[in-house]
Structures are given as C-alpha cells and as structure tokens.
Length: 407
Image 1 (cartoon, rainbow, N blue to C red):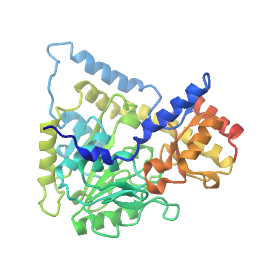
Image 2: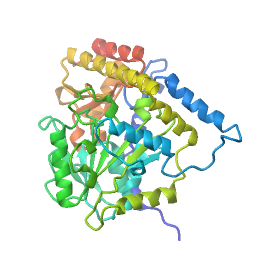
Image 3: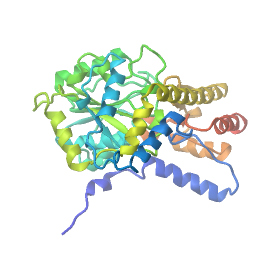
C-alpha cells in the first residue's frame, strides 16, 4: 500500500511566497486597474549583461556543431568553471581545490539536499528569522515535531533581534547542523569575522557542521566583512558553503550555483574526506549536472568583462536599497540592512503585526513586501522590502509610501 510522507502535513500554513501571491491576486481582483508595485520576492529584474549573454549564446551554438557538441558532463560541474570559482576564492585569500567545488542548479536546492547525507536524528539550529527552505526542508525530512507559536518542536531557534544586531548568540545546547546566512535573508545583516569565529570554534568543538549560505556575498561593500566562511580560520573542518549566480548574474530563472564541501571537513562519526565523498556520491546518483549551456554563462560571468558588468548591476540594486531605506527613514520608520545586502528590514510602526502591515501597505500604497513573521517567530513585528526592481518602479513605490502610508 502506497503511503505519503506525512511530514508534509506538519508544514505550517502555506509557503510564504505563494501566500503573498494569493493575497496580492485577491487585492487585484477587488481593485481592477490598480498598479501594484512589487518589492516582495527577491527576484532579479534587470537584463542579463552582454558578456554573460555572449557566453550563454556561445554555449548554445556549440551544441550545433559536431566537433563542439557535448552531452552529459560531470555531475560535479565542468572543470574550467570549478577552477574559475577556485580562482575567485583565491583572490580573497581562500585556498580551495576545484574538486571541493560542486556546481549545481541552485543554492536553495543544495541547502535542502545536503541534509540527505547526514543522520536523521541530527539536531538542527537555524537563525530566526531565516529563509524558509532551511526550516521547511528539515520538517519534510522528519527532523522536527509539529509547529507551535514559537516554531517547530525539535528545531533550535537562534533569535536574531535588534538587541544582538540581528546575528545570533551561540546555541545554548549541543547541536549538530547549523544554518547561517550572511548577508542575511531577510534582515540584510552581515556577520563579522569575530562573530563567525565564535560559531566556527563552537562547531569544531562539538563536531557540528555549519551550512553557510553566502548567496548575497557580492553585495558586501565593506572590505572588513567576510564574503566567505572560509576566511575564518578553522572553517574548512566544519563548514559547507553555498553560493549562487542567481542574484549576481541575473540567473534566478537560468539556474546555476555551487556548493563547497572541503575534503578536510569532519563529523562526530567520520574522518576527513568522508563528507566530501558522500556528497560526491549523492550528486552522481541524483544529479546529472547543471546545463552545459548555463555553465558557459557562468564562466563568462567570472571573466574580467563579465565581473565588471555584473558588479555594476549589483551596485544598481544596492542603489535601489538606498532609495528605499532613505524613503522609509523620512517617514520615521526604523530600518536595518540595505548597505551590504539587497534587502531592507524595517520595524513595523506602532507594533502592527507583520501580516497586518502587509495588508496595510498593499491597501494604502499598492506596494507588496514580505512579512517578517513568514521567516520565523523572531520576524514578527518586522517587514522585508526587496531592492530587486526596475528603478522607475522602486521610485514609484517609495513615493507611494511617502504619499499614502498612514502612520
């Protein structure tokens, strides 16, 4: 008799972004003709830059010639791209062997799939608020109990609050797997080297593993802030890092990312090399590799011209964040993030709940954002606005806030 995975039944309410879409669509049905300005989902909006387009085009054209056609490639990614990524990290003083870099179709999927090589009884700690996939994928995998007002039983939540600068304290108990995102989605906070060192030391002491999501690392403008966890001494024995071309090269719909699993990584019950071997086997078994065409685009994005053009696009989105931030501050709203990340994290005025503020913003200003409570219990009373948008729409949204928001 076939049976379903009942862990899916534990998932609280609808997934955050489909719920945003449902409420937005309902508003548009009730207000036909209204222009809705979207600063909600972190989806890129600007066209892919010319240098990367050429790389993608070259990849397509190569498939049309017998001498350059390619079928299946290595599940771990083509060597030139893995080498280019290793060279990128070398510029930051991080030494990686290309074989430690696994190219994939998304940091989101990797952050969920990586769980499969670890024991189901591992105790998981997550930043709170956190990107929903960290929590929901662990629920589906069976590592939690049911959801309550303070989150899921069995998960260790590490609150990120105004008081601690939106970077958590160490877990107050022994945990096995730790999710950290820096620059953080949703708060925009960036971990310092000193803050990360505490977690690296904790992980090495307790034989825990850190899952470090650095998908927004390219948005860090402060040279003193780390872009990779491997800039921290000792991280190679306790941390797995995920990154992506999605936000830096406009690949949200193209799909290309990478995960780093150092060969020196250890767990409580394994020696160096075992975790690397398990992830290699997992990818070889379940994954046939990222698109050959897309990997050509990734190579182009890492070229000198590609980096110059994508860096300019990153700077454009950061300017959007500055416009949003300044507009909110002019209204007397308390904000965080935006300087080294493409998200502005705001405190809802007068203690309004996150979802009530969503409805208020949509109803009064026709602006869509993301309720902080959708990212976890500690997100209640906060709200995220995304800097991913056309400049004209961002400016219209900010002006609508100034003109119409009643606070």
